[in-house]
Image (tube, rainbow, N blue to C red):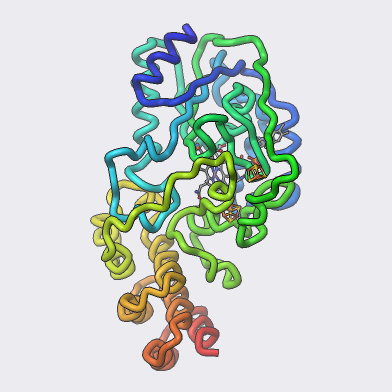
Length: 356
Ligand code: B12
Ligand code: SF4
Ligand code: SF4
């Protein structure tokens, strides 16, 4: 049975597969609890459910008897589906919606094997995916917290299949991280979010560009170079095998994104990919920040237009900050003019801060 699952998974494009028994996790629960106690989960309240269920995995799926972890590199997953936003997002967010692509593949595998009951999970809400993959022997978890496969590296997507029959009972050998005295990932993190106790989401750029749908803390804005995600702690790792920066497949894309004013305009640009999942307000908010950090002088007019006409105060506030980052006379003039007529007090405050 295990060889058959491996063979079918490989035909469906997965590069590594491993199995775990349905049993409570121990050390990992403690690590998760300490991480939560430190307040590192930001607004991601759903992660407390992992802890309160004791990570026994059987709370929601009492019928499950076995689990399979699948691993595929993000660049393989997106192969042949270049998208106009590739240059502006971390590697996981390129291409089409990975949730759907991977779910479809897992459903096809389950149908081909013919389990009488199964459930697929991709970027799951309650399953501790890294801990399970580590337990299954797929790789180690280093100081950058990536599940790193010895050959494929850490730039990989994890997904799981829960099935109604036991697949393995023996414990596999757990791989130990080769980090030693290395701390390259921690040195590379521009915000200090990567701590010895895990990632402090409140300081992590990946968190602020994907999960935080509100104001980005002002002290972090100047560090954001991607509309979605951050790869720096992966790129720094000698074992990480990170994909290259996305090519500039469409240089006009950022401007068109910032100029989108409603859901329809935004949807026609974002399609059904990861940008669509995060939503217009959040994406345009981050896009003006990225345009300023990349010093895109060609987009000053476009950002100014967002400051004056975007319906969202969140976008207008970040547009004010962004204009303040261009060291020329025109943006300052625009900011001054707008300060007198901007109806929203929080945006007026951002304009004042940008002018100070
Ligand atoms: C919440 C979340 C985030 C948060 C918090 C990240 C974090 N490190 O905790 C934010 C929004 C910041 C985030 C960012 C990213 N994420 Co994320 N995220 C998740 C999610 C939904 C839960 C993670 C979680 O449980 N965190 C809690 C803490 C405590 O987890 P942890 O530090 O990793 O520790 C756990 C295990 O690793 C293990 N463990 C860790 N160290 C050790 C050491 C020992 C000795 C032992 C015994 C166990 C152990 O035990 C802990 C409890 O499970 C998972 C999907 C899932 N359901 O698992 C994806 C997931 C972890 N994310 C993923 C990705 C790709 C990213 C980003 C790269 C996206 C990007 N490019 O922007 C960044 C990477 C940042 C980083 N350095 O981790 C992938 C990671 C793939 C991989 N190879 O590891 C996952 C698995 C999604 C997926 N299906 O592929 N993410
Ligand atoms: S994803 Fe970026 S901000 Fe978050 S811990 Fe890694 S390097 Fe730091
Ligand atoms: S960069 Fe160094 S310390 Fe960080 S995960 Fe990789 S090997 Fe470990």
